[in-house]
Length: 559
Image (cartoon, rainbow, N blue to C red; front, side, top):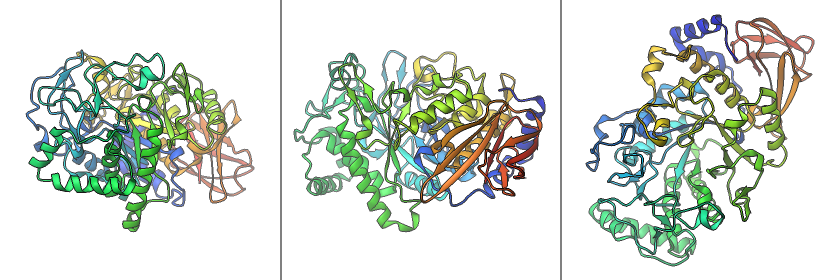
């Protein structure tokens, strides 16, 4: 869908005269405050902490991680303070973000390694050396506490990215964990269940023995580290209390479950994104989920004034290759597994980048049918780009408006990867592997309103803001039943009805600029005043229709 030059001009003017006031006034002032938050309708913003925003340059180098790395494979300075800064500025509010997923903040290996793409440090957060510490490159515990407090104050939930499958690679500074904790071979071949689960993902990525119930002592390097930091006694006392309370054996996975749920109990983390979920025995996610739920209940009990809602703890699984067409099942070749049976509420939908090639109605109708049918009661998280998918939808950023429309109006939850909303480049010369997907957030291009492929950054950002606020304020967008009202012009409705709450919206896409009449299909009573979230106009229902006179080719109607 291509906007006219008039639309581009108006979008730029809106940014120039004050984007915050424009967007807040259009969608926030009179948004339905009683609308419940539903994870099925979540608008999740996913960012690489190190690449998003540098809020504290004083913590940019730690553990002498200063060797020259391959392009975009070292630490670039982003941190928790930088994320907090953008929350406080209202950046996520304007985007209609309801949940924030950051890459892991736990302490990373101190050395670097080369997996075939050049020397790399653990800037991405997935090479953990200590599950109990915040990596100083990302900040300190007080920064994490403030991030949670600030996000919650803005009505934004926080999803913690968790790793149970592996430690960080072995380097000259990071010795391998004991044999009772990890395996270092064989490497996964992905032929069947065993060769996907009981193996190492790649060479030199020690695999936690998650299947083991054997009691083990803590790794000596961890004991030595805690002693130097003056917290050995505290950590050991807490572990003793955990194992006494739960009755779990002191097996590797239960140590990690304790460490991960500590963050929930202490800070009120709202959910987990489960890294490498298919590489771990699925029953373990059930164990983790139950402990996380108990931890969240404890936090809510101690902080009743900070509780956002009564939702249970949320878990979304990264089962690489899972697609919505598979329904509840994922096939390993020799067996199928229903991950939803193990406390997992949603799966990342790796199929959406292909689904997005469909026209609007085929996309929306097929997803609604699946989510209201075989997947009723659970959900998927859709994305157009991510940190490790080398084949995203629209990698060259040629269809930014269409991509945003399909992502944010599709049934299911949406995941905005940092820079989707600002056309951040995904094809960086000189990079190897997934580094090309992980460039620094393009704040300078937002500030200068840079033009990429003929579209100003301001226009794309404004588009994402309007759609995101519409989704955030209306649970029916992601969780409702889809119905096409008219094929030409293309108009559809979404309806979400429960005993406690009802929501309905009507949207029109690829319309003509100027005056347009929208059929409401009997969804609103005569005289009802609706708001068009795209233009900010208010219109009254007359004869089961509204007339919207705007320069845009899109209409987003709701109370």
